[in-house]
Image (cartoon, rainbow, N blue to C red; front, side):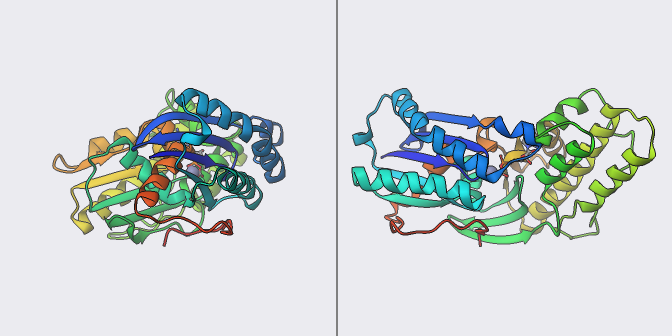
Length: 327
Ligand code: KG4
Ligand code: ZN
């Protein structure tokens, strides 16, 4: 089967073509237009998707060396995300599916992040524990079997990606914060400042990052001069320590042999290295290539193919759901 994937939940306009679980083309256009505003402007993002989608789809077909008539289905993100940007992608996908008469599958963006691991590692086996860490979510899932999810832990306030983004803003570093903080941290000492780690009591699988952000704010307001690299490295380490501790805890509680990391923050090498270092030898940990961790449409096309193979498609009148949950 050949599937076109479309992703427009936030500020990445992404288009991909997958065939039989393999990527033929994977294009991501990160909108730079928001840099002038210090964050994503929803209306501007939606217009940018509208401007780019047609062009990127033509380019993607070209890269995959196929024509529109070769497509067997279209997968498109239906949520969670920004209402206007989701609507742009879904409306485009609906129009295309009607005009060439192929099925459409509305895809949950969070589920697609998880399935990026199955795209990268086709032999991955259930049951497994997943740390899902993105700009809007920080959750631990026990995945017993395909589409069988149990939520083990969630954040009470900010998501890990949000903690990176807000931290970068406090430090005057720009957006998105994760990659910038990671880069600056390479030159700093992660032990320089002892930032708080919340909810670390035994067996607790919840997260909270708002106190961390506040303590960074206090530090920046109080200290006249500070070493930016040390602060960034210590701040990053405080986030990563918590994520890794809870992931390993969940793996122990559920007694699984496999665990995966998904979402934009999974691109962080400090996180990847610490998990590799701390995980027991008998447990396997997986995380996809960086371009499959951050927002992309290959994960959308890949998951849509799984649904289509099971005969599960969406009605043409399905709606976007900005606060869509996994379960
Ligand atoms: O999954 P994603 O691309 O979009 C959402 O679904 O939210 O995740 C975006 C988040 C942003 O908060 C960004 O700062 C963070 O992922 N991120 C990173 C890194 N790359 C992206 N965080 C830490 N280290 C990175 N290298
Ligand atoms: Zn995402």
